[in-house]
Length: 519
Image 1: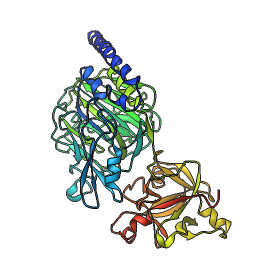
Image 2: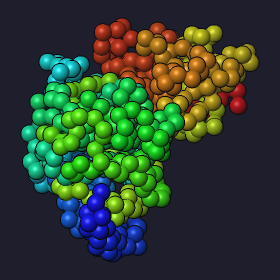
Image 3: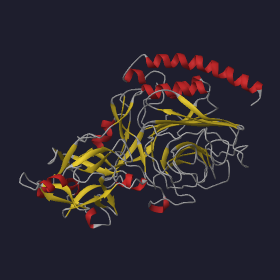
Image 4: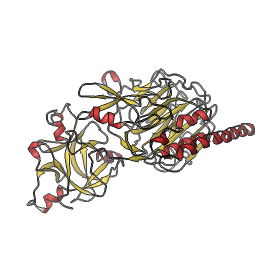
């Protein structure tokens, strides 16, 4: 960086800090919904001279004056759709709209609206070089209830991406192209990731193909090490610039890029001619740190950039569909934002008080011990238990043996793959957890792998039958713990397997969380 450029950028940052600092001070002296109606992220970006050209969130307004829809859901029972809006202008998602509309059925997120007014909404991604798993090669849509949280005490839902899920807009308005400057931030679940390619949010190719080095500029989050990586075991915030995940200047390892795994993770990538940066922070407290700020990578094809201006979420530029992650909010800007502007945006994220949340109906507290009783009329004396490695339901009464009572008792643990969810450790067999394999439930020892953690994590929801609690698989979120012919499965409501049968599905996947037979 030349001294002149440095002085200019420093003066811009000082001016931006003065402007956005005053705005944020006003935002932070209030609490609750009234605070949300003050300056929000896109107000701050505009004040800093780098306005939002796309603004996506399923949890809150990103402008103080915004009062439109955040996202749309479609329910499986009749394919009807409903927009989910805000409790008030500039406020938080009205999750009750979704809960009422989706009661007793499964809903998918079909549209994530753009709050910027440019109609840069995200919808179901079409197939690209890699086809999606849906009809005609399209990607899957996210289950609307899979990522429950609270924001300033209000219930809301994020976008829970599993491999095969993806959103895209290949016909955008105002998004940076070529070597034009832009900024991107997103709020992710820093505990939900894998090493697949690629959980991205940002600027990508308009034909869903790999069009060469420099045709993308997105935030990547995960622990993939095929291209680049940072310090520690990961995950890392990196930039997907096409044909490379970059953690800094070097193509492979960059020691200054740290492992980050905050439950709510603020991630930033921004770029301008021969200059770019990576920043990140804890979305619940504190500020942002910069892991890279310098010239473009030392590989041909990234200077100048050749950005094409599509927007994607959860997939790679060529529709690579191997990744997982959770998204709550994010924007793309016109122009290269100052650190001061981003610091003020981070302050609004912290002020929003994001918190993990089990869904309504859950009484599963990590550290407690419970028993899970079937609620289907045939089987209300039967409890989920294990016999060796097999997981079944059996009748348990006060006269049952101590072994049977212990095998029907589970220690609730924070989800091994997602701290917003839960895992179940056997009361009788320490270190052994309820997990699924080929859709059937087993009790196995934790082998420490990412696959085991995912297979052993379940996300509580209000009981599908209207009573008790239903438990969605973390990595197959349309499948729920079900008893069928007294055997435990993860089952969808209709599907190719006999245990996916629709008859009594709602009852079979609803469990009464009871006092443990063995405390």
